[in-house]
Structures are given as C-alpha cells and as structure tokens.
Length: 311
Image 1: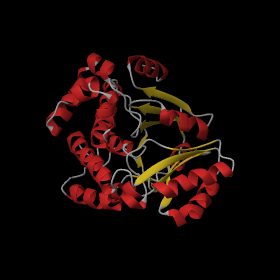
Image 2: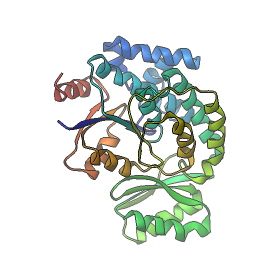
Image 3: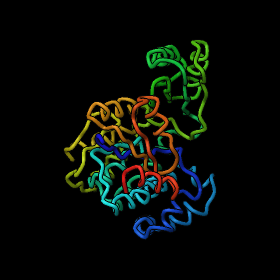
C-alpha cells in the first residue's frame, strides 16, 4: 500500500444528524461535540443532531458544525492507531486538517471558524454577491469568460475542484453574465449556486482582515503531519506560514485539483474523506481513476473504511 491522505470536507456538505451514529458508538467522538459546546457556549450536539436545514445553512453555524463532525468522525481512526502520511481539506476543511496535524487545538479551531463564518457573511451584504458552478469547460475557458464579464462587475475563479468543474464568485450581475457566456461556450452545466456570499474572491478581503486579528491571539503548535494548503497547493510543515495562508484562503481561489495532484505525485494512493458527504471523493475520482477513495460519515462507511484499511 502507498501513502494515505486524510481529507476533510468543506461547507455545503452539512445535513441534520451528521456524525450522530458515530458519536453514539464512540465516546471519544461524543466528547468532541461536548468540547465544542463548552467552547462555543451553546449546545452544538442539539444543533447538529436535532435542528433544521435552515439553521445549519447559516454560515456561522455551518462552519463549526462541519468542523466538529469531521473531528468527531476522525476519532475512531485515531483510537485504532490509523495515521495518515498527509492531510488536506477543502476551504473550511483545511481547519480540520490543521486540527488533525496538531497545528491548532480543536477548541481554538471551533471558535475561530464560527467567527470566520460570521466575518465571511458580513463582508458582503446578502444579495450583492453570489457564486456559480461551471461544468464541462476547461479552466482557461472559464477564466476567459470571467474576464469578458468583468465589465458587469467583480467576478473571479473561486474553486478549481477537478477537471471540468470550476466555481466562480463575485457580484451578482457579473456572475450571471459568466453563466450566460459559459453556456454559449458549450458548458454542460452553468448555474448560480444557492449560497449567501461570494466565497474565495477579492470581495472577501475584509473578512480576511478580521480573521487576521483573531488569529493573532491563537498559539500554533509544531505540525505533526504535513498539510497541503488550498492557496498554494503545496505541502507545508512550518507553523510560521499557517496564519498567513489561512488569511489568504478567504479571498483567494481554492486549488483542490492541484492539491490532490501534489499528493498523488508524493505517492498517496488512498484518500480517506472524513466528515459529511462524499464530495471530495467524487472530485478525487475525476482527478485520478487509480486513486482509492474511502469515507467516514456514518457507522456503515466507518466500518467499511476500517475493513479496507485492514482493521
């Protein structure tokens, strides 16, 4: 077997009840929800297990809910002594990766992402910005459409997910123009997404500045594992670079396709997606047909993953 990567889910994968089965079966996972409750001062377990889609969709709830669930779902692997060679996460998932690498304590991370969600939402008034997914065009074609639509306002690449799948972000009119231009270019699908803010574009710079102030008060530890970072798609093992990259990440595109390619090049052949959903596994399969993808989201997927990893 080659190297193993643990990869962590980003925003949008959340659902009511995520992580519940694992928390009921593993005390270490349940403890993570309790720690989140203690750190945030409200019942996180109740919000994640019993609230509704609308509550979980609010960005400052979504981010701590997904981070908590991801770290809870990680616990059974740690209990069984399964360690990765490298970790990475998409956008918000990069914080889970840093918790797994030992860079940031879980309690600091959960408080930080709640604020990150709030700052990202506040940076652009609701209704001013949006995002769109473009499927079936090359990155170059989409970038060209962004340039052509910039006469309507700000619009920029936001997520390079996998071959033929990109997300753009910016001002509503400009994003709608990109959708139109991409359809004309022959995109398989080109659609505005139901999001509340234009994440990962320059309009989010004010959120990065507020995040920078919060990060100043957080002490980072030496990293036990390399983290592949969204902004540069490179391995980092030096904690001194982490804060700057997390600040940049808010208003810069996420280079997920490049991140996965960096891990493949390093000999990773097994990717374990930890947290709600299987979005990253889908992207990884489109990047490399040979890569093995496993996931941990509930007891079935956990048991299957443990079996595949020889436990």
